[in-house]
Length: 165
Image 1: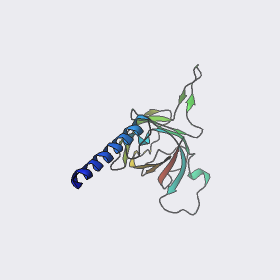
Image 2: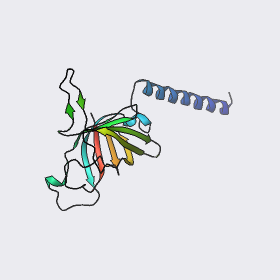
Image 3: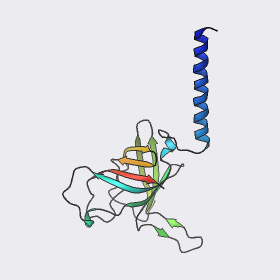
Image 4: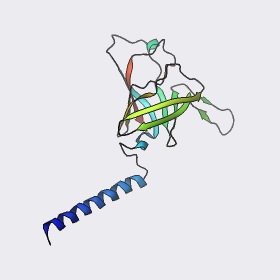
């Protein structure tokens, strides 16, 4: 058997194994990094990073963390700050987030664009365009601001980190 034919078979076999592995990951519902659905899920705010170091921040300078950030596969999202949102009094009890909106992502460029549709509290300083990265159970958003809920003014925060629930 010629060497060229043998190497083609190895390449073909490796390609088939790679395709099978990708298909198996997709069929289990696993979120693949670098795909549009990597961001889909429920997240809680676990950290933030200032744009420039600050001497000291007081309680009135920062908002409560985001308790739940949800990205749905239908490209809708919702935001609930800690202590925010509401519950209906009827049965079944339905939780209502602080606000809801729509989003698009460009996984190749690592960009996200969000816009608010409606909510109980719609912040005036929302900035929904920025960069995103998903690594394992961590979502990092840079240049995105979900709005100021109770702080006197928008803190100088450039990066928000969320952990998957």
